[in-house]
Image (cartoon, rainbow, N blue to C red; front, side, top):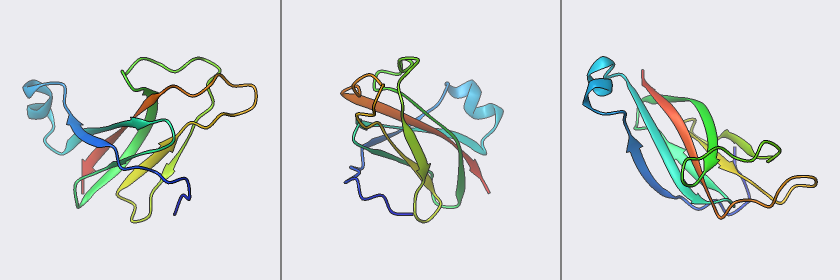
Length: 106
């Protein structure tokens, strides 16, 4: 799927809950991309399957309860793209957003 929103690949960082979490299941990894509310892309390592996408403010805090957002799978199926536009009856988009996905080793 292509998104014509000029999605910028954001600084991508693997986020883990520490060594204990990594030791608990080496086949699961959490990936977070932080960038402009105009669009971020979070991708899994090659051969891993993405799932459980969710969007927060760039600092990780929850979005406003009435904030409208959108995410969907990207072409190639190795991640998700997410964005927040200035939707009707929704607060203005935050300056930055974080898109977090769970990657599972196939």
